[in-house]
Structure formats: C-alpha cells, structure tokens
Length: 193
Image: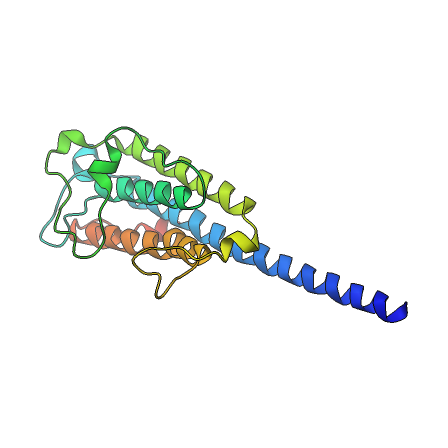
C-alpha cells in the first residue's frame, strides 16, 4: 500500500509537471503573439491611407496594407490547421495569400482593392483572438500530432507550426515592415512600445 501511494504521488507530480510545461509553452506563444500584434499596430498607427499602400523601392513591395492582410490570412490558415473553419472577408484570400519564398506574385497594384488600416487591424486582431482561444483548448496529444506542410522536415508537429506562425512568420513580416518604415524615413515604431 505504501509503495502504491508513492507511485501515485510520483504519477501526479509528473502529470503536474507536464501540465505546467504545456501551459508554460502556450503562455510563451501567446505572449509573443500578443507582442507581435502590438508591434503591428505601432508599425502602422501613424500612417496615412496613402502610406499604407506606398512602395518606396525595389524590395519593399510588401507595403503595410498587404502585410497586415497577409498576416490575417496566415492566422486564419493556422486556425484552420487547429480545427476551426478558414474565415476571412470575401476576396482577402486571393489578395493576401502567398505560397512563400519563390512565389513570383507581388501585391496587387490596384490600390483600391486594399481595405482600410482600421479594418485590417480589426481583422488581424480577430484572427489572433481565435488562434489564442483554440491554442488554449488544445491538449498535448493534439499539439504533438504530425502535420503535413512544406517545412515539416524542420517543424513536423502542430505545435511546431503554431510556434512558427505565431512567432516566426509574423516576426519576419513585421521586420520587413520595420525596414519599409526606414525606407520611408519614418521613426522607429519599436521605440513607441
């Protein structure tokens, strides 16, 4: 009886540690995802409608309106991978989705197709909230499931994909937007956070 009691205590301690590790990983992801949203807001907060679609030169074709829309569709695709329906406003998938490096397309030159900064931020925030809710509901078994995508040799599980999309993918594009601001001779947005 004594050894069974000790084994049960050890079992529950291990479960508690695993639960804390999963919760900690989710918390870290959500904290970074929240930071990315706040940084995105800061990067565009003082931009005019014209600046939102300006291209200051070669290499800066992903203007702020495209970048915010692209991050929105990326978060919608992630929500779909996490079990929710893919939801973005009509026409956004075609306007903002890309197939990653090597995709020869540039953002549409018809500036009239781009939504307002306010709508772009609102939709990005809604997708972020959806992903965070879904993440909070996923258990370790689901997070460890393999997922098929172009980088699964490096990031083979759903958790890997979530970390990439919530942190890396967004940070890459927000870094491009920070470079765009410099090319436009605008002050640092990071300093405003």
